[in-house]
Each structure stands twice: as structure tokens, then as C-alpha cells.
Length: 153
Image 1 (tube, helix red, strand yellow):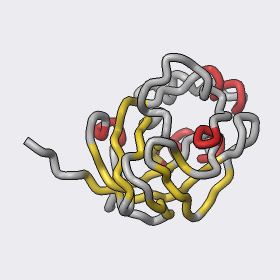
Image 2: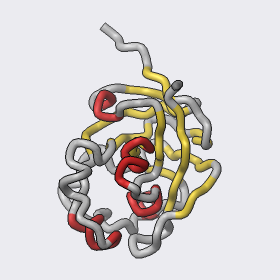
Image 3: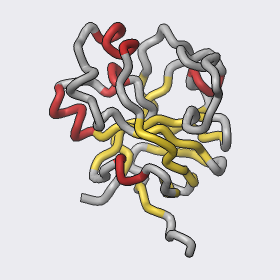
């Protein structure tokens, strides 16, 4: 199965459950337009130090299906299928035409347990997704392919 985007989720505020959209404008070095982190009002927006990997989050749809967790409950921006996100740490890739850089794993936190009412820390260990930076402007759409950028020597 080719790697692709199966869903996109944004939320205007930390306390609002994310909702699905068919496409979203990606703003380089900022996030998805209309999302809580783009707006600077996410749960962790004010946390220090402000390092990379706060612009976009991804999670594998296969993991969600296995755990019976909805994409909205997972609170990640992009749901993927056909790609192992852990392999994208430290790599550049494209979602459609948008250049992305995988920064670090996105482990579950106690906040996720609180908002879902489920104990997800252990089941999502090493499978909580990917934190990434957006390196170019563009539109990300459901169905877009996810393709690795060639590595430069």
C-alpha cells in the first residue's frame, strides 16, 4: 500500500476536540492554518524550551485501528497509512507538495489519558506518532502521497 494521508485534523483551541478537514494550508515554520498550535493556543504552546517539532504531528492509522482509538481522540494533525513514522525521524519527506522534516517521536502524555479517559501511555509507547516541522508552504489534502526526499551525501 502506498504511503498516504488518510485524514487531517485541526482544533482551534486546546480544549476543543479536533475535527476532520479535507485539506489544510500548511504554513512553513508555523503549522496548519486554523490549528491550535498555529494560533499559539495549544496546551503546550507556552512550554519552554521551544524546540523544533511543534508544527505538525502525525500518527499511523493502523495503530489507531488496533487500539480502537479515534483520530480525533489521538489529537494528532495527520493520520497516515502505509508508512512507519518512526523511520522518518531525522528525515525530510513530502506530503503532497509540502516539504516536511521528521524531528522526533511523539510519545503519548498524561494529557491524552485525561482527555480520552483511557490509559494510553503504555499501548502507545513507541507508537504515538511523529513530531515534524513544516519547511515549505502549501496545501495538504486527504489522499496526498507521503514520499521521502532523496538523501544528500
